[in-house]
Image (cartoon, helix red, strand yellow):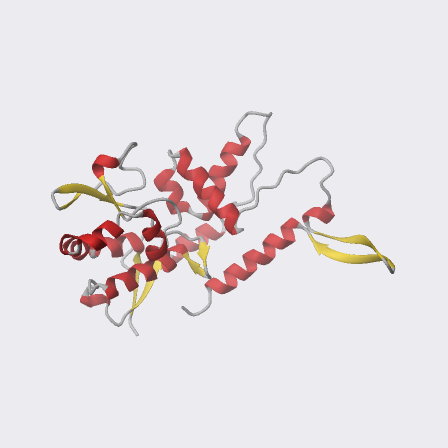
Length: 253
């Protein structure tokens, strides 16, 4: 089967005219596309963004979280959310692949899919798509990017503030680049990753030990006396999760 490699945003924009025509003909579905919960369940969006949002409803800069292009539907201006794609893992797939497949299913249901994508295997990627190829050199550059970093300074100098920025930049670089000036969006995404278990924020108190961080033997008092059990520390637990996510991401889609 022929493969097509494309960014989620580019795939969506190619179909935007079909979606706009559908919105004009189907007011009920157009209302759905302005609903935040509908966007989450239908397209896999993880934050509180609707698929379309009326320009007059923006309280902040409409260019943040939404594409700058205005779309006219029933005489009103709307913006399309840009919060698609990323390399974070959702159900064993990258965010790009997970959301891209949901968009593909939606287009199929409403007969909006372009003919050139029929019966094709589509690989949805994050970042630049250079003539439908993934630049191998850039992949190696990402692998050797120094991820282990130490931020140091006196209390109140911004260590926690910048830790949030760096964590999002590493795990979801596309989102970070689009929202680097939007502190609220970065903190919201950081909390989402904490809840999903992809980020752990640990305070290393003075008595923090090797056993707590990596692995240790802990004694427990039972009716039979003392029992000794090996327990994983936070770093080992995270390493196990990372390994499982990596292996799941390599499985055949």
